[in-house]
Length: 147
Image 1 (cartoon, helix red, strand yellow):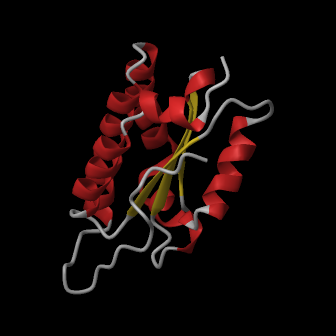
Image 2 (cartoon, helix red, strand yellow; image 1 turned 90 degrees about the vertical axis):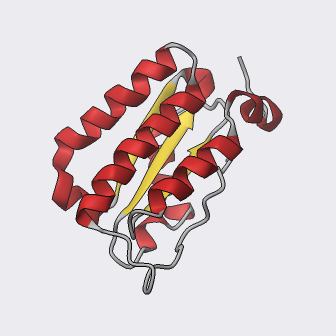
Image 3 (tube, helix red, strand yellow; image 1 turned 180 degrees about the horizontal axis):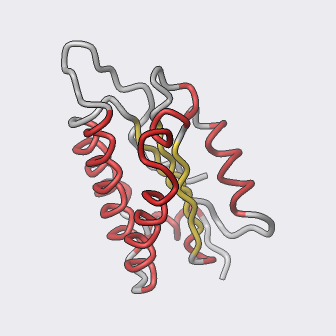
């Protein structure tokens, strides 16, 4: 099934995800981004890498950005953490986040899966990159990118 931007916006509740991102980022200096792509052929990992660069996730001051890249029509996703956060949490953490998101995706609850994944990432970012209201600035947009 080919998903248009309009259909993607019906499957993914952008406002609810933006709210989850903002709540998580009020606990950390880290940045969380979500990109939702329509159906396409090819490697989801390569597309996620391109979105990571395009959205500027690697340009955060502390290299603590995280991208959730989702292709609902293929029921696939990738979670990419930049070098700063990955050095603290390791690969096992990303597997845990993927398991949380996957569970909801299997139920076709894409928004719920993303919200739960964002909460997990936000908690861990807060441990290693706590929020400081005097110095923190929102380095990346919180709106969902509908590719």
